[in-house]
Amino acid sequence: MKTIQIVHNPTAGNGRHTKEELIDIVTASGYKAEYISTNYLFWKKHFNAAGAEAILVAGGDGTVRKLAKNLLNKKERARPLPIHLIPLGTANNISKVLNIAQHKESHKIDLDRNPSRFSYGKIKSLGNKDFFLESFGFGIFPKLIAEMKKRKTPDDPEEKLNKTLEVLLEIVKSYKPKKAKIETDGATIKGSFLLVELMNVKLIGPNFLLAPSAVPSDKHFDLVLIPEEKRKELESHIGNLIKDKAQEQDLEKLVTIIPVQKAKMKWSGSHIHIDDNLKRNYFRKNFKIKLAEDYLEFFTDI
Image (cartoon, rainbow, N blue to C red):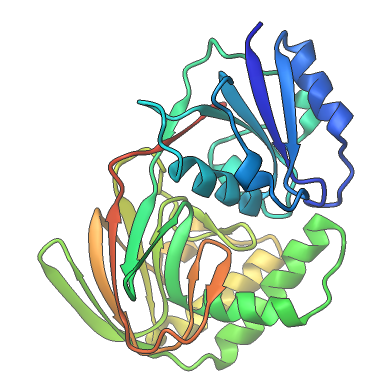
């Protein structure tokens, strides 16, 4: 019998999911289940999917990133183990761009399906290497991450997302734009920006659609820029998002999007973000980013 390795974050989202439910999904699909919880302090050290045919990861975007880091550090196979994702977090941006069912009751594992390739970005800075699955950038989103760490937020995921958009609107109204220099594909871009993002997926933060054409299998990133002169348009767009009245054509009026495979970036601010992780005190550093040669694989519904 084929084995599925379960990686479960029991505290993701509202926490209303159990080890037994996930094991039942695997066994009902006709496979043997091996289980590990990310609450276990040394789960990364003891994680071993050498005998598994696939991984079921149950958690939010942060859990997917933790698993990805573990897998990318253990390249024992010629190709990656395919991942079946059950989204249990708040934003669940990765599952939404892959059109994966948002309710665990809808999930059935089928290893006969062909998984989809999911590229990622490599970052080189300060002598260290890091990576991103969703996005890397500067400006209002690192500020948003920092601000949300200070605030008490609702337990309900929808209310939390809406509250996050309200905080983002507050930030945009007062954020002081920073200078950036970006060198990519033979072009140099300079200016003062509210936002500079390299997007691997179309959503960022609180399900904010920022790069409508971004696909994690298309072998390039979308460089997204919002200059300071677009502040009022950005305020209006976020306000419409909060009211659920936003239109994609409104976004087109305020962002510049450039497809790139690699970039060298310099930012005059101090904070950056890598996916949902805030990085502080990166003053005037150069960042080199490129599309990785290897990749992850996900079972998707697209």
